[in-house]
Amino acid sequence: MSPWHFFVAAITAVLVSGFAPTAKAESWAQVEFRDPTNAEVVLAATVTNDQGYSIAIFRNKDSKVRWVLSLPQISLDRIKSVGRVAAYRIDDNAAVDVEVSAGKEGIVPGLEEPEIINGRSIREILWHGEGPSPTRGVLRNMLDGNALAIRFFFDGGSADTTFDLTGAGNAIGPALKIETSADPNLIAHDRDRDEAVMISMKVCQSSSDLSTCLGVMTNCMGANANQLTGDQMRRCMAVHGYPLEPIASPTKADTPTPTKADTLTVNCTAIGDLARNVMEKRQSGTDMSVMMAVVEKLADDNPVKAIGRSIVIMAYDMPLFNLDENKQQTISEFANQIQVKCYQAK
Image (cartoon, rainbow, N blue to C red; front, side):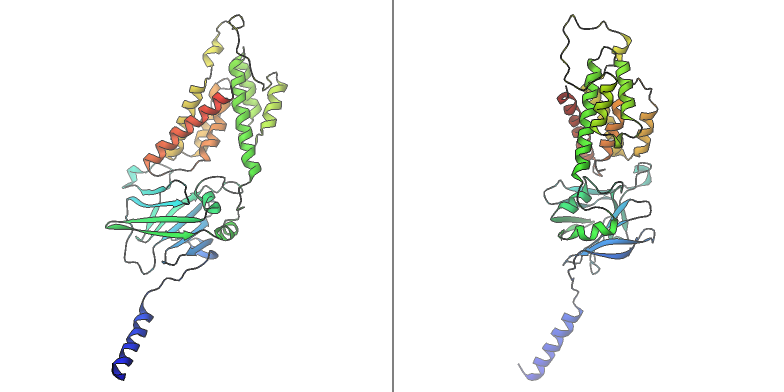
């Protein structure tokens, strides 16, 4: 090769490499971010991987936490506008589908759907934002996980990418002003409370005065069941003559004559049906306050009211899914879980 040809080849290589698009990998960081939907400037935890895909996680003024998943700036692809637009999975957890309805008639009132922005980004609610830290769901899995895999769907195909979650919590925590670790005391508190409520239900079922027992149980749960502790429930029930101890099965001679109160008997099947109905509303996008209002309007001697608050709280602590298959699976599993707890408390 002549010196001239060598020079031309060298210059060409420099020019090509200078104009070739490259994606620089970055660590998780906190930056000011402008929400592409409402132009609100927020503090966000962001990261861009070595392929150029990026994530921004932030809290809006309504306290809800959202994220924006974006294609590389150099990408010529466009995300589908409707249907299944993406799917993601954290470590070995179940995959989550992101779906967008075809029209307004397909959107449940009050339910904010994922939004496609200019065909290049997906904006979606990640966490309801209530409490010091998520105890379950996608954001919890991100804080505890190692890797996030995402698949974007286009009209003519799809693209996969992954994100390293190492150090994500160091940026997400301060950006959202949350604790990055799940509070084990809070988790234990909720489990102990739920167990006490379930045992209370069984005690009332075995009582000769079901209506009175359910009234006591409702009063013991108080106006804010979320703050109730298992010990408070046990003490309150015991003070009113209903200690939460194993109840022996009554003999035939001890069986009381059926009364009107017996028609209020709440068995585990009925509790399971209640749990199913509540989770169906949860997965349809009905607001939690609506379900709580329904429970509060029930008569004090209605057996549903005694357990309703706790079941609503448990249901709305579960994530809201987009794919119908995931919704139905969650509804069935939740109803079965509540029934199992009921039978175990017997």
